[in-house]
Amino acid sequence: MSIERVAIIGAGMAGLTAALAFARHGIACDIFEEAAALIEVGAGLQVSPNASRVLSELGVLPALEAVWTEPERIALVSGTSLRPLAHVPAGRFARERWGAPYGVLHRATLQNALLAAVERNPLCGIHLDTPVRQDPHGTLTRVTGKTYPLIIGADGVWSNLRAGIPDSPEPDFSRNVAWRFMIPGGTRPDWLEAGQVTAFLGPSTHVVAYPLKEIDGFNIVAIASGISPGKTWDAQASDVQRRMLLGQFHRWDRRIAQLIERAERPTFWPLYQVSAGRWHNGRDMVLIGDAAHAMMPFAAQGASMAIEDAFVLANRVAGPLPLAQALTDFESERAARVAKVRARGLFNRFAYHARGPVRLGRDIVLSLRPPQSLAADLDWLYGFRAS
Image (tube, rainbow, N blue to C red):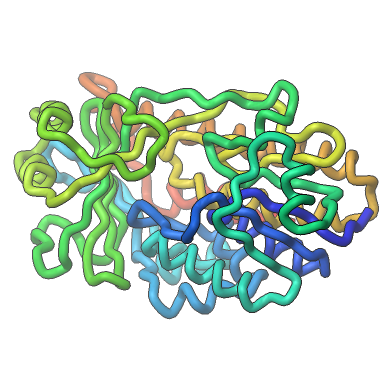
């Protein structure tokens, strides 16, 4: 059953991608965003081949390729000794093996590219400073004078639309935070490789670093235990909170601890995840992205799963099945995929944060795995073709 128009709540990556995916089928989209201006918070983002393939289908990828970096490898390094443990080849290898690139870029770069494509598309409209909370159908009709057979909740982990879906997922703070800061490219220490994504693994914490060509700098993210500052993605760290963070790196190589200690204006994001639950109401509302399945970042797939969701949902809704069946099929298909990605993230968390004898065993196992073997383990993830 193909419909003529949909409403999308939220103008983040999930919502903007959804608009382009529906427009690709000739379906008009109105996007409603409660923020008065689209300002992407955060810093770096990894876009793996399963997502870049979708962005290519939507015509957005060339704008990203002009400014992003395609790292030569994804390296795992001991945080206590800085000894390389293993790596997955990327760069040209990713294009050849998985048929699409692996890139790193600033989050704002992706959002701006998606927004520009939406603004160019005559089937897409965007309404800023327009919150949609209670009575979404009534609110949307009052704003535009139109009715919508389908409303898509792309409004993130603290989704308002989720309240209209019985037995929907519920958000929960993971008791972990992501500390984010940037360093200029000219201050990069010699031990921080310029051409790769590096995950430094340490007891109960890990640090990810990679270059951002757009700002001639490096994105650094430290995942550690912490206290939630509330519903925000851009909390400023107090002196007490910074001391709490540094205390978790006392067993690490001193060079990493010093890098974190000297960080200028670090911000931190509370890491929320959502429970299992229904993603649609069986009639006219459905959730995608973090609103449906926010997860911990240990597989670096949050944005990629949202991009896949948007593309698959548009394909199902534009297909021949009645809308209710299309939504059911979408949830069933995507929930299975997300569950597998979530399981991979939980495994990575266990491996990355290992301590004591488990850590020693992990290091031995990783050192014995050739790069091609580690890449093969990711074929199901990076080689996935959303359709």
